[in-house]
Image (cartoon, rainbow, N blue to C red; front, side, top):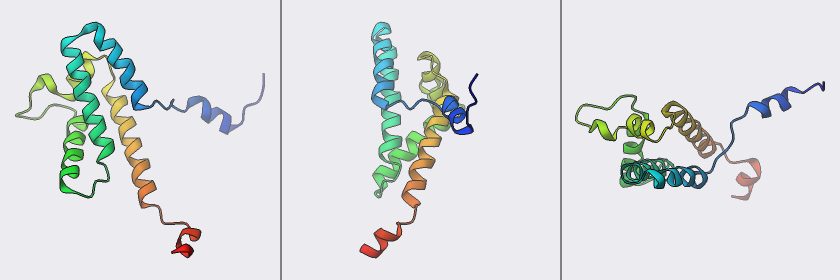
Length: 130
C-alpha cells in the first residue's frame, strides 16, 4: 500500500469539471428519447444556466435583469406565489432526474470563483505597465 500525500487525496475527492456543452449534450440526448416536455424543460434549464453565466458581470441593466431572473429561478427552493409550479427549478430537475442541490452548489461555486477573479487586484507587473 502506498502512502498518499494530502494533495493526492484531495484530487481523489475533487468534483469532475464538466463543460456546459458536455452536460447539456447528454441531457439533450436523453430528452430526445422522451421527447416533448423533456425537450422543453432541457431548453428552459439550458437557457437559465446560460443567462446565469453570461450575465453574471453584466454592466447593463438588461443583462443584470437576465442574470437576476435566472438566479432567482434556480436558487429558489420552492416555487414562489404566482409562479407556475410546473416550471419551477425543482420540477424541471425532478423530471430530468437531476439533483437540484448539486446543480445549485456547482453554480454557486462557479459564481464565487468568477467574482473572486473579477475582484482580484491587478498584479504588480500589470500595475507598473499602466
